[in-house]
Length: 104
Image (cartoon, rainbow, N blue to C red; front, side, top):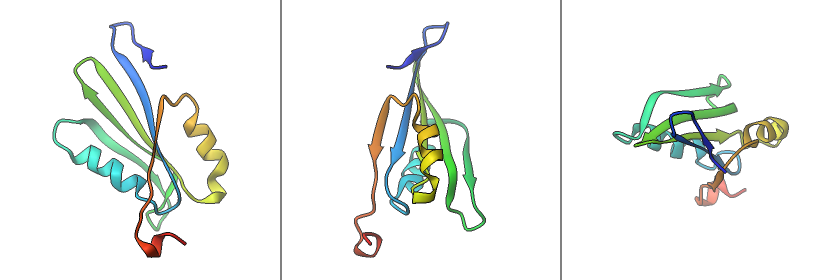
């Protein structure tokens, strides 16, 4: 259930979820770059190779609705970080790359 700010604004938390190299960050970058959807900078916590370590985040606003959109790290070793980021999520978008070399 979304939260409501004192000014009546609804706040939804949405997470892109899926396997490592599944396209979660790419999808979030599309949201960020789409004109008029994102406000502020895209926040990214990555390792030196550019892989997500904890999460990526974009805030998008449409009228009096705010969408806090996250990705979670897909690697198995980040299981506990995923659980932390997913707390309080209102919706998940399962994302994966269907290219044959990404389905291993």
